Length: 253
Image (cartoon, rainbow, N blue to C red; front, top):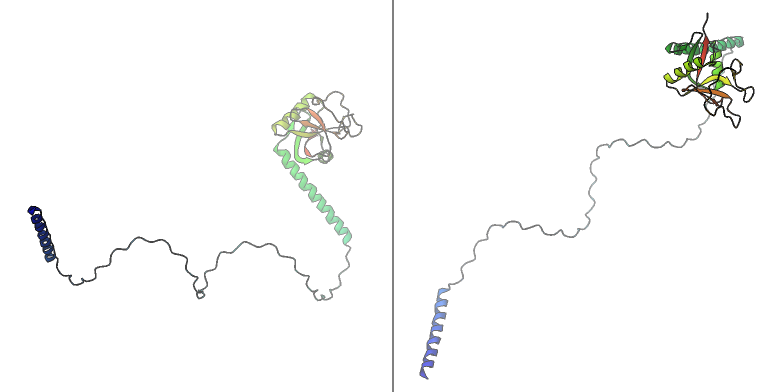
């Protein structure tokens, strides 16, 4: 029973000695050291709330002129201005018999216009014509109605082309096709009597015609003139339409 007590006494004295030893090793607090250098910047924090609107600043200098803008729309018509002062009285004119002079000038204008038209026609003819043993053929590359085509050929000493046989028809058809055209007026019509076609010299179509299949067909009675297609076939058509046409001229012997 004495041994346990002895052990307890030894443990108690050992614990107290350890505490004294630990206290003896720990010194007094030293003096406060100097402030160290500033550390590195930390990460950027989140954006703060929007601040209050500041006071209006002073007006700055005028900037450079900008580019000119687009033209605006047309404005409204302005009010009529006040009438101007009356002009002075003019000098009396001289008596002139101007009527006959005006007539002469008018005739000269007509002659000049015809001359210009004739020169243009001759220039175009020189550019290209077709011929047979008896006639010349020329495609007038001006779009005209049938009646205007007749007049155009006649005032130049010719007629609207009249293909009265197969050979003549082939010459004109090849001329049209080689020129790259699709159709032209020729000198055939039934203007005088419906359904009775004649050439422009009033000779009937007795010995030759070359109608396209199913032609002439004029159910409403409006197709009184004739066109030749580039194939050489004929087709009745309305006279008021405008297209190129072929004039023929008899060779002088």
